Image (cartoon, rainbow, N blue to C red; front, side, top):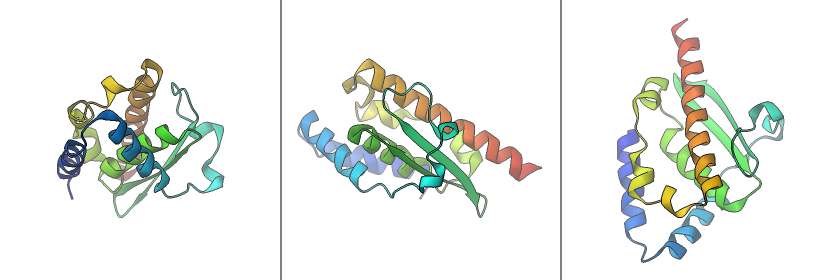
Length: 141
């Protein structure tokens, strides 16, 4: 699936919920289903700066696509990470860099997070894009 298709699928899923309590519960469930990150990647160098809670993210390239793994010490944040990885993992660096993140606004996520969590969300997206830039430069060299 393309990034756009995945984002549209997420928008559809979120539109089924009546209120934000149900959406938070769904995000928490997504966090519980996030595959565990290998402990060797839970290093300070893989911590995302700007997040209120600890978020570790690691990327590698497999078959010219960026694969992400991540974890967080906060359950809601873990769900947000799971959403982002669903969208951006297994995509080419070029597609990641060209993708917009309008789905975040369309599902109302940013406006329903505390300012520090919203900043963390922005930091996570920035980090995903930075990994894509790094991986793209490795692929083209």
